[in-house]
Image 1 (cartoon, rainbow, N blue to C red):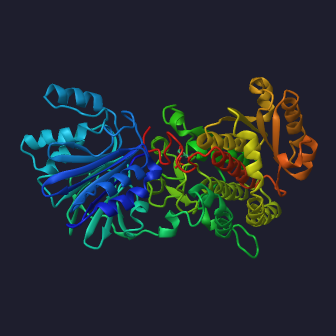
Image 2: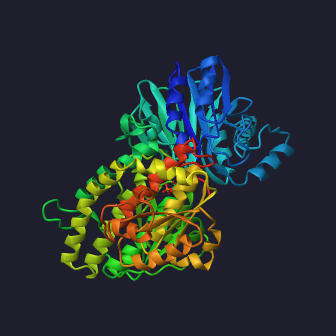
Image 3: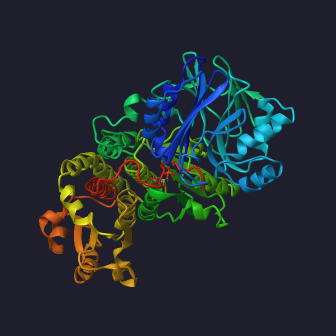
Length: 607
Ligand code: G6P
């Protein structure tokens, strides 16, 4: 949530700051702001709404300077307005902040009682006030910043300019990510390496509690104990192409269409191309004696976890408990001795998932992260990380990360099945064969994209849509509903079809769209009986299934998504595509912003 970029080059920084912000908009787009220091004064622009509003302002009234900081905001404290937009300036100090200062009210009350005057409703504004307060007590700016952050509770990544130190830029992190970038005669600070990808590939990832003082030529880093440290400079592998739409209309569309290649590459990572044998060395965990596994995640990653539970239990006979991170972290759940806990997170930075991982560590669990972002907090702090290798995902609604998580989890479940003797080698080979055919089937589904425009017309004007499925179709129904509601704003819910009669069926009115996930599996007949019950009450059922299942449901072929054949291990990955395409087409038909839905942000770094 919120993205920050700072730059210092002794010349002009504004264009680099805007370039960086463009790549951070996925973290929030309620407002944006940019401040530069030039001729001993701050010059500042702020604009409510998406970055393009700030860019307009920068065109009509350009500002530039030798050092600058900038911000794109996802509002936590205080409405999204120009007043609350960052940077926040108090006297000689100017600050941008990502995170939440939990004790800001106490700090603010105290500062007000000491004579400080506040202008915004943000938690952030306490930071420049504290720095100024400590400077007035005689501390240098470096010491004052380090002293100020001792007062802060919560999570933060900050970047600070001081009018009286015009050749310097300062940054610190606690709980929120921050990287340094090394360009030609320029140093950068940013929320992630992707922000800097078009400018520089040379980055250092700061550790928690690091404090940095930079000028154009030098970088000084101190750890939480105040010890001078070095952080390795690495070359990020994010390419310019990864952060563009590459001819697609939206990032979400591009990311949907990237999926077959991602799944194919993951297949080659986990299986021998020729023999289809499982490459066990790719998953360095022995599941043999495990009594139980816990999986924790948020949002779409949580539905991947729910799907994996079916797989681990069926193919590996391994009991799995799944929880959403925001509940798990406070539930005080006792964890099994020598247990394994899995944390699934595209960004690897979701605050609740990180906290849940820390809780599991306190119970001596072996922690495994399934992440997309290589140098993320979860990737660095878990005992073992399995990368899903989906490439940067920018659309706020997760698509390719979901199927890549599923593919990784499917492979893990197979490994667990082999380790535990629950999966016979012949069956493992058959499953590998099915997974090897998956990318081609995914391409087939994507080729049939026109149908979704017609289906979107059946959905777009309704205020409610219902997704149903059984077995592996149940978590997918919830994910399908999440996709639709988060970008089209249609109230959508996913249910286990067998549960409809216990309440949800009351929602059915004449014409209510019910998207029914109906693969030709062992539960098909039961599934169809449940669907008939909603049809009898006026639901407009849109089946997503095999030819045979669609025929049984008896809707017009134009109103159904015909899927290639699938099996238990491939179905959720293949059927995720129509869920995504349906949400995408409905949102486009409503003329809404696909990649930046209202109120959301992609990386949820606050509780
Ligand atoms: C946000 C995003 C979702 C994502 C969830 C978990 O809510 O909008 O798309 O599924 O966070 O994110 P993570 O990075 O932990 O997978």
